[in-house]
Length: 585
Image (cartoon, rainbow, N blue to C red):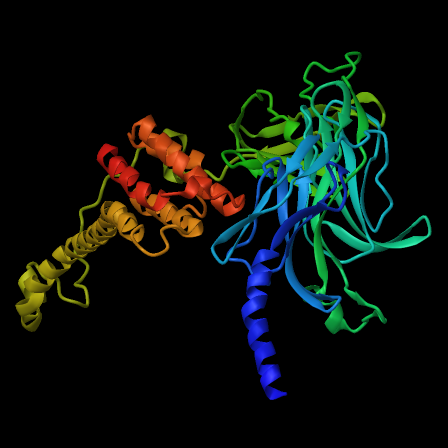
């Protein structure tokens, strides 16, 4: 019996791998054949007859799509006493344009052999512009506070994301439309709500929408991308314990939702009643002013402060000017503008100040300043004025020497003769006629060295400090210069390592080369940025284009799993870097 069991085990161990290799197959399946631009279509690459691969599958035909990985899972099946194993790779595709596309084949390497799958077709259609978003577990809704507005009038654009499942990594793509401007109003709000009897978790984001040119506009749908979690369920039911509802144990899939399109009519501002000094200010504004102090002396100054604030396109608030005032000198300060916002829209305030210096005493009147704007609620132009201020100026504090002539000089009488100076007495202290009597003999020994030291100490300290700063600056420049000179050699040495065919590694050392060679601090390097930097430093366009092609091949290998452009990059990149080093100015 033991011998039979041993022979059976040996037979399974020798025959099963051969049989598995012979039965390996690869297939691509789609969860649906037609989808819209806002859908994420699940694609599964199934491998039967193997439990592992040398590398993840490489799928052709994915350039028109945004690809998100959904993970991999292995499986073991026993059918009619026969055991088969396999592995599934899940991807989610979001189309960037409508059309008919062919996805596949997928190629997989297992134990050095390449296996190829079938191809599948996928049709992407445009979403109906007049349909509202589907009321599923996740959907996005958009609304505007008014369907018509005047040029540069604020309209509230509100997006609400309705959720009945857990999500993360939410990103928003606002609609793009010429002559329409969006500005976010505060942070998103999150709260509980009920829609058509169904409870939702709602994420609300508000924007100030402003049209800068008249016309009828159709606002395209806004789009949000996120990762949605759906808990795994067993045949016995759901596990409600938080341990099993953690995202690590949940099934994830990317979700892309779109809002409904909206229409907005922008009308031109009326010409009737438009003031001559109208600056384009639209909204609701107020003006306040104060003059401090209201009473001064001639030659002193008072400050006039005027503040215009309100809700609307506050950047249109003009700089006001005081008229010429008799016997008053006016000095204008630089205006200060402060922009703000709240949940109801954009706000703005401009503060202007003038220093007023009177030349003569008297009572002066500071005239009011006016500003005009268009009020959309009243659909009319308004003019607001500051208050009239009175300034009282009294004589200055000039000192005058008053002389009393005395009775003997009244009526023009003759001045008395001068008397001869008489010596009354001596001072308590003796009067010295020479400096020798004031000298301290002990102090005289150290006087001149100390005086010379005090005289030359400041120039010595200044020169030492200046020399130290120059040496420090020169050392920093020397380090940067040495790093730039060694950047090319360092990259060539790194390309000789065992990771020279690793696309992530090649992209990293290329970025480090540019940072060291040109003194930059780039967190990422695109092929276009590389070409611009090289041409600005005197590199020939042909050489820069060669590096662009190499970087594009590396990026395709990293982000699109297309390794066709990666062949031999680790060997050709050093040659291109040598050519760049020769051509740099």
